[in-house]
Image: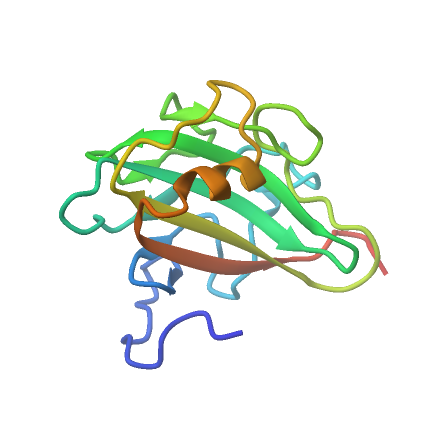
Length: 172
């Protein structure tokens, strides 16, 4: 899949990779020029949540939500859900910081579950950020990606997805 729209200028060498899909540009310094997530943010490293940045949503944005996810052959997996991010916030630092409300990953736990792909080969992951016209009505700790998508239906003003790759170190 294309990482950027064809009319976007090529990324500067000193700029983090950016993705734009649906009108909101998303970027991360945790993704190298090769489009791969740095090991620190995976199970091959210390599993620290990656830093994320996004451009301002359109007028009327009252909060943001985000999810890191991956389409596995058997199902869609979720690694991180954060909602209730204030409208004046445009980034999350490495480690996640204290921004928004953390939802449930695919293991049913709140927090970041670092990618740890099984099997050989490169896998593609995505981080999607949504600009919302109203607060997502979700439980404080217990929102899955599916619950988030249901809650933001009809209140999403814009969204952007940044795709990146990861391959287990030492995997054949």
